[in-house]
Length: 198
Image 1 (cartoon, rainbow, N blue to C red):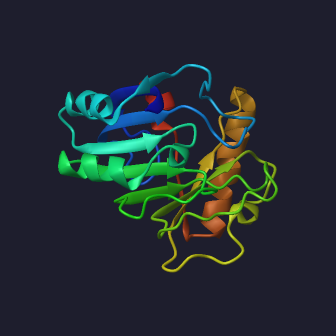
Image 2: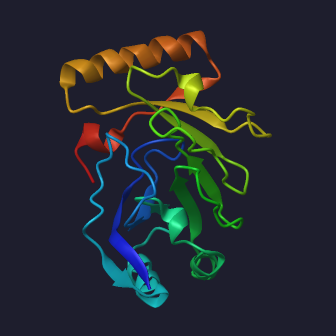
């Protein structure tokens, strides 16, 4: 049984796959507590892998995003294999502090080191996309692992939604200025919030 917060169908709102239709499987629970997290950890239902597959297969897209919470705490090779057998391309969004299944098709790591000292990145497979949430305080390089993985992942800088429109605007402009000075980075916006969809 796995603790599932929600399974829903939408568009990927951020990162490299922005705008792509996806089935989101949101796992409950996380080993970190970040101040900007917008996920409830108290609401979940226990589901078997059969239940999860049935829910995911009800939608037309065959791209699934495992998110949370921290999905690596509950995801294993067996679930990935079953999703693959059902025709899904499988992506995961992780904080990178726990080993992930090697058979994932796409791994986004969003490191949380400035908020959690000692939260080192140990993904266990190459990172496809490293997404830094920038709140205007910590320097983007503070989030990066001491040694950049090879091959280097795509580097995305995402403004943190603080709930304060004026501060959010300032943070976005700080991100833009940083990326213009460091062109190996790209801007990631939470388009689902801008466009008003889940």
